[in-house]
Amino acid sequence: KPPLREGFTTGTAAAAAASGAVTLLLAGCLPAEATVALPPFTQTANRIEPSDDLCLAIPLACGAPLDEKTAWAEVVKDGGDDPDATHGIRIRVFASFLPFNAEQLPANFQPPIRPLGEGFCESESSVWPGRWTSAPLSLPCSFGALFLYAGRGIGIATLPGLPIAPGEPAVNPEPRKQIAYTVGRAAKAAGYSGPLHILLSAEEGEKRALRTLNRRLGIVGGISILGTRGTVRPYSHEAWKETILQGLNVSQALGLDELLLCTGRRSERLGFGLYPCLPPQAGIQAADFAAFTLKGAVARNFKRLRWVCFPGKLLKLAQGLEWTHAKEGAADLGMLSRFCRDAGGKADLLRALENMPTAAGAFALMRSSGHSLHRTVLQKLG
Image (cartoon, rainbow, N blue to C red; front, side, top):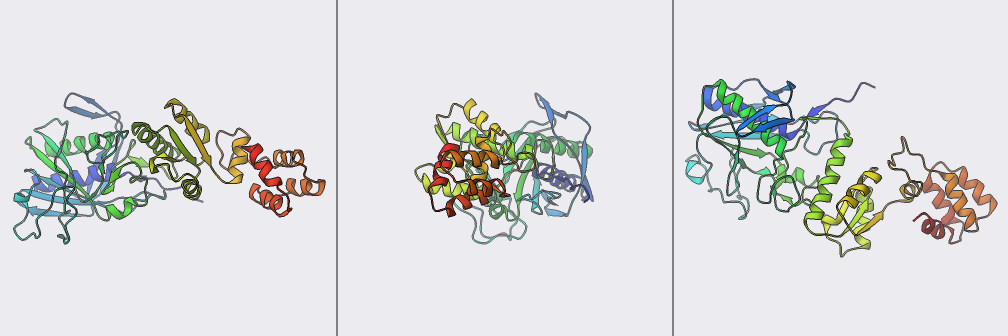
């Protein structure tokens, strides 16, 4: 098979769209693509610089002036071959000389936009994003002043423990620097040094966010603008680990002392059925990162950890495997057979267990034997 194709992050998409909107606003033309520097960035006072020379040329899908003081441009986010919830989403960015407020709306726009917290507009312009945050976020920049707004489809943080403060747009620190640096380059190329206001929006952002962990992390209203490296590696372990750490940080910041660790959505759903008193933020989907999650939980001084998983993962945890993926961590069915023997299993059952291809099949075989062997073995594994 050919190698999996890499994509780019929502942070890179937003930076490219912002660059296109600023160029259209200041120079009157929309380029075919925007060159975006990739994280990490270094920041000193009001100066942001990329740590190396890595860049991506991102195609601009479309854009247009909204009026003489505002323009917009759009990028279609490409996640490559990663099963990314935001793949194909349209990131639309508005650039303006003036703050985004009701007085600046086009004359034919109805109804007026309502501030965050008062709900979304019932009907919207096909172009205008429909809402913004009640207060802009000031970003460090090397020119004039730069203000960032979260428009429709971009989430707002509401809980502590995230890299961003409650009440701020869900734009993580590296993408903020990436946007500021990219907008600064576009402004400098056009010879402009005054203030700029940048509003991010995402088509279907609220709907796409339902397929992420945003709601549990306290991010409401849309997707997050993310990206510590600017590109997306398909099926990235780093991305999953970052999600685990964010979940642990939110749980810690909320003062929780108990976690519900699980391997995926099914085991998590069953876990909350067993422990309905636990808040949603107690759930951490550790997947195959057993040791990584446990170490992170211990480092944050949680008092009680509950593991909810299916028998195959339980066996691998009992084996002491730090990484439980089937590719590198095989289930020790011989160990399972020994536990069954210690619980009184007969010779024919033990032989059958050792020949089973999966742990799930082995447990099904024990259950079908008509004894309570599987319960005894489960307790020993636990």
